[in-house]
Length: 143
Image 1 (tube, helix red, strand yellow):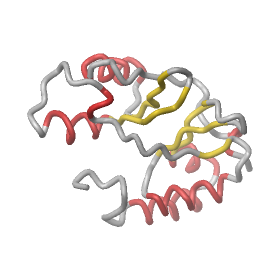
Image 2 (cartoon, helix red, strand yellow; image 1 turned 90 degrees about the vertical axis):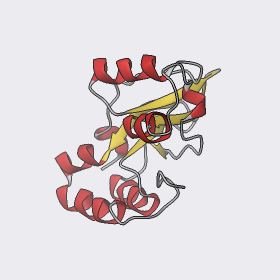
Image 3 (tube, rainbow, N blue to C red; image 1 turned 60 degrees about the vertical axis):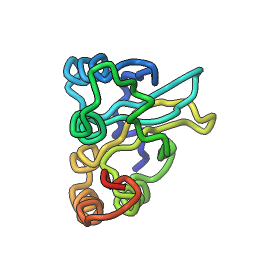
């Protein structure tokens, strides 16, 4: 099964110059906790609700803080034609629950999450989640 078969295609992209308040409102309006960050037709980062809490609120930054100041700029992604088993294992290895999905021209086409995988392949999602929940990794908030 390919990523394109289970990914979410209805995506909202935010700009790195938006404030965290604007982004938090978009997250609330769309019932999501993860958004890709794009600039000049390029994927330049991602931001999560946890980034807002840990990298902004907990550090005492104000509501006018820009996305670029707290986003993860080390963008991890997968291709829409990749096998979901491989991508889920990779998510476990790099300890992320969601990934932007791009086509072979590296154009953003969707988002895939462990929840998407769990709907189709629960055992694969469980294996990925087991690796994600082990503390450490590049996306650990204390790094």
